[in-house]
Length: 321
Ligand code: ADP
Ligand code: MG
Image 1: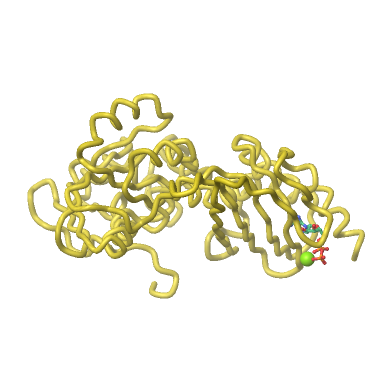
Image 2: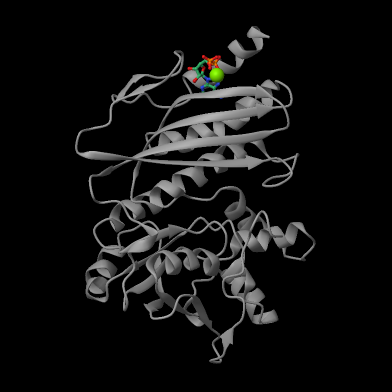
């Protein structure tokens, strides 16, 4: 048994960059970390369960990437800079090929963001992956869901609904092979918007990452800010594939309520619009203004022909599906 775990630890100890703020990483009873005096610690956890979040035959390298990416996305939404992660792995068996592929996806993304794997737990059981991510944010600079003000502008990064389109294709919707490959990449390899999140500290009044659908996730900003949001659907940033789908069906549920986008949605005071948009040209992802914060307590989505879309805040809910 211990041989098995020695083997597993071999994959973790050198998997990620070593950081100067890690006093002790993998190998003791706890990791010991140095939080700089003027910074706050942001902590987030996400679990991916086989059969719920991914299929049994999932590509392990993509899974290693995605499990880390969704956690870094939460840090980005808080304006936190990723620093450390712990990894809870439950594996049905020790499969070295699977594990080294998984860790290749995990390590490549960790290296890109200078994140160190500082501990975890490995158990036997039905396949699931839990990651806890720890980030640093200068005292007082974190972004909250509850900070939006009346008149603030609402933005999103990237394009919306691509991952949802890939899911529908996996469930039988017919797509050209090239289009499917492109959207499947969005589903399997989400890019956490870490740089954008850091830049938003100086501009945004509120932020959230999009995991459960735009309408639903903006609903959290409404609820916690005590205000409403009006979205103009014609402004939503769509890839050609999603735009074609929406034009053919007039079904807006992909960009509005399908999950797994892992883009950022955020609000900023109108007075900061010009400064923000000129800075935004340097970002590695486009940002698009899609709506405005106002009175009310919910998300209103306005169809291009002017009518309100029902169910704007429908989205994914594990306990109500
Ligand atoms: P303990 O029994 O004291 O909890 P473990 O045998 O679970 O110790 O783990 C020993 C060391 O290996 C610890 O530092 C732990 O954080 C690390 N570790 C175990 N599993 C993982 C994993 N999946 N990823 C990273 N580190 C791990
Ligand atoms: Mg343990």
